Image (cartoon, rainbow, N blue to C red):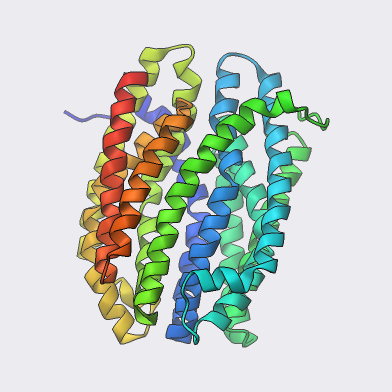
Length: 426
């Protein structure tokens, strides 16, 4: 008989607030998609192209920041708060450097990046302009990411939740004002997002300065030997994340080459897919902290928490699949008024729904492996799965085939991650 245990309550104290925090960026994207969808097919397609580009820039550059979560949690777990504070400070420095580099890259190479995505002549000008606007928010977005990373490491997921909800509300208010009230269209959506992200990044930075995290940060210039652990973990996560985002970006590029309707439909389905995954990803965030904190001192507890979180991941995946299946005909109309785009989205909905239980297991396993600091293995496994998926996508003749390739990628991730999980945690 299934019943709530003390372990479940511990998981819930981390996972429930993490869900609110995780929802921020996808919720911003969902709101943008819903409003921009009212502007027509070309702006919506441009939004899809830029989302793919920013996804690569964001997730590749934050690899080093994400590496801090399990390292900080492990340091706290073994009773070394000074090392945890040092790691937090190093993460901030790395984020500042990478944020500046990302800003320069996006602003300087926007037309080339849009061209690489295969955007059509009607879509490319919209996408280039929107990309340059959104690029202004990259430094703040990296500060937000480091904020999440550090707070997760210390076991506080409530503070990031409050900040994330706040920036989402700012975006929700500014979107209709800028897009329709000021008549800025797609550019208005970009400025609304940048303002919201800047406020969120500023809030995290202020909290770091005031010691709200519970860690006393010392602002000293780091030496290479001090950064080695963070850089080493981040480098492996960089490879892993690059492979994952490359596969997702290839999916957008292939959809764009199939046509404007296809990439617009892919954008809608992808944003719903990401948003639906947040519940399971919140459990993965709990896994990062709990596994990292217990594995060095209490392996049995780490194993017990891991098994329970995998069960929760599967259960949530099944529930999401059922809910999404029931709503598959209604959801597309929330994000687009174009009949051809809506019709194509409806054909993708069964794939998105049926993949949720699989995603539940994969995302939680991913969190467990991050907590176990198995970054090198994760990188190798992800590269393998991504290469197979990209090969299938390059042969795809429809956007549905692109989505089946993404499902195949997660099947391979499940197989490889579970094999390693049995060796290092169980």
